Structures are given as structure tokens and as C-alpha cells.
Length: 273
Ligand code: KIV
Image (cartoon, rainbow, N blue to C red):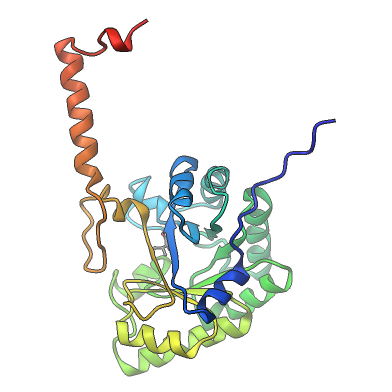
């Protein structure tokens, strides 16, 4: 009898995240939305692959993450799961899948865990969702928090702007992170937060902070893969560093292919049967 195929299970666990903070080892996270890039970033040795709801903008060209659906997140997370062997796999919960009722949250997050093989979900919000986080953790679903600029609240926040600039807002953010930690989050994303505020929060909490536009004082960093690869060359926020210029590579390669097809140079004898 052939053995039952085992689902992929990543080597890195949520417990490792907390241990990495204690050992002062920086956590490296990137997004991926498909199996191929999931495999490549895993082979590059990242600690965490996030199936971000940013896929709604990056892949689908939507103006925000708001219209991302649970079905969409599950579809992409299943694909990424097939490529990722080592890194912790975390899936973003889309807008309205966890905010309306506790039952919705348990059911939606439970579906993601059951149907994708992810090891954790990520929810946006602080004190307001702490009880939901607690309920999820109680039934065995690890939760990564997300505070600061929470893209699902972009309209309430008045745009994609840095959060926690004044003392009161910074204090509120710190208390949101403390509430998430008490509720059982194993880590928290800090997005678009002044570096000094993010460093202070990171020093205060026991769970690791993963920054994006939040300075070097965080316990780890995350970037959207397509942005760091320079594929999304129309998007140039201050916090983004590009490690490749792949938009130019794509235009160049496809341009050369088109030229060779039009001139009858491709396929040549080496590429024909
Ligand atoms: O959706 C996403 O890609 C994210 C990261 C930017 C943290 O939430």
C-alpha cells in the first residue's frame, strides 16, 4: 500500500519566531502568491512567507485590498503551500471575513487553516479585535497581528500614510500591540510607523514585531516580493528598497522575443524538432 501523501509542513514554527526574538535573530518575511515564487523565496532561506491580501492590488490591479475574497486567499495560499517547505506560511484574512462576528472569524480562519495547510493567519487591528484573536488562539489557530497602517482601513485612515506620529497615537498603538500580545498573537506586523515608535514598541513587547516602513528597530522585516524585485516599477514609496530591476528585465526579454519572432529568427534549428 502506498503511504498517504503528507501535506507540506514547514520547518519553521510560530514558536521559532519568539525564540528568534529572544536570540536577537532578525526575522525575514516576504509575500508570495503562487507556487513557483513561493518555492524560490523558500529556497532563498526566508523565515516566513506571507500570502498577503496585497495580491488583490499586485496581481489583480485593484485599487486596494478591500475587495479581496476568502476564496481568492484560499486559492493562492494552496498554490503557495505547494512551493514552500521550510518557511512559516501565513495567510492574510481578507476584509469582512473576521470583523463582523466571532463565528465568522472562527469559520473563515478555520477554513484557511483546513484548506490551505497554512500555519497561521494574519488579522488587521488592535484592541478592537483582541477578543477575536483570543478565541482563535483558544481553538488552536496561531494569529499574526497587524497595526499601524492597516490597508483594510485605508479610507478611515484617509490614505496610505504614516501612523502613530503624535504621542497620543503612538501610545494607542503600543496599547494595541500589548492587547494583541495578551490575546495570544505570536507576532505583529508594524506598517508605516515612525522608526522610534516601532523600536520602542519592539523593546516593550515579548512577541516579535515585523516591520514594513517601520525602521530597523523591529525584530524582523517584510516586503512585498514584487516590489523588492522591482517588478512593480510604478510603486516607489520611501520605505521600499528594490533589490532587482525585473520590470526592465521582463520588458527587455519579451521585446527581444517579439523581435526575433517578427524577423523569423526564432525558433532556430537548436529549438526545433
Ligand atoms: O498584504 C500584504 O502583503 C501585507 C504585507 C505588506 C505586510 O499585509
